[in-house]
Length: 213
Ligand SMILES: C[S@@+](CC[C@H](N)C(=O)[O-])C[C@H]1O[C@@H](n2cnc3c(N)ncnc32)[C@H](O)[C@@H]1O
View 1: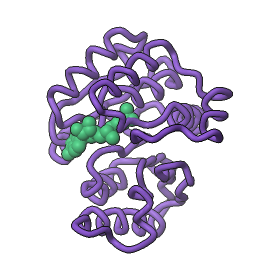
View 2 (view 1 turned 180 degrees about the vertical axis):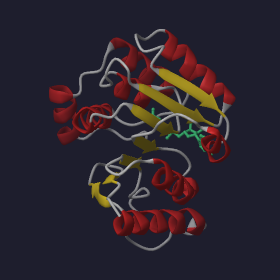
View 3 (view 1 turned 90 degrees about the vertical axis):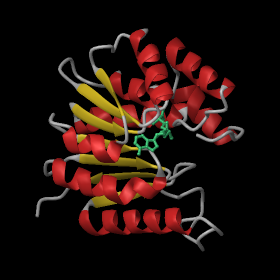
View 4 (view 1 turned 120 degrees about the vertical axis):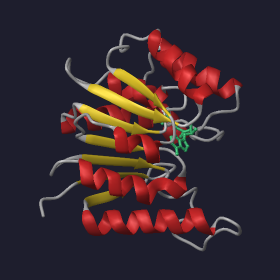
């Protein structure tokens, strides 16, 4: 979510379907105070939660933790033996997320891994049945390669911001060609290699299943 005013449609969805826990509201306020409103919105958080339940995901890898807001939304939908490993490059943000998670009922269900996900993912040993990509946009093609290699057939891939702030379907904005090319490449590869669609949320949320060969 960016620092945009919530429109009436999204507010309606939020009020009706996406009530936050007190902790989630508090995290959102803390992030806003620091000008870090770059997390998913409450309604996208609820959507992630519904996807986790629908897919019966148990072993989630999240790329891009920030303050733990989206991870905490997903954690609520995990079964007792489910787990999220979430990767965050910034040590300050990883520390902030750990503090938030420590005050939640999901301390044992979420592990924050600090470091550049491109390197850290290669050391990840656990099972994976869902990947949520929400980090730097130039990295999406590399994250997709990793997800494709590690997800089982039927595994779920979700990626936020795939409209690239409403630029991906038009010309590359000046000075942003690298990011634009990366997102075009990501979306095209997902369309070709997965059972995929972009949900037309405010930012574009891709959901994709890894097909059988
Ligand atoms: C959009 S925010 C994540 C928001 C979070 N998923 C939520 O909705 O609550 C993106 C995060 O990815 C982190 N990030 C950027 N590049 C990264 C990388 N190469 N490896 C790991 N984290 C990265 C940023 O520091 C930032 O905190």
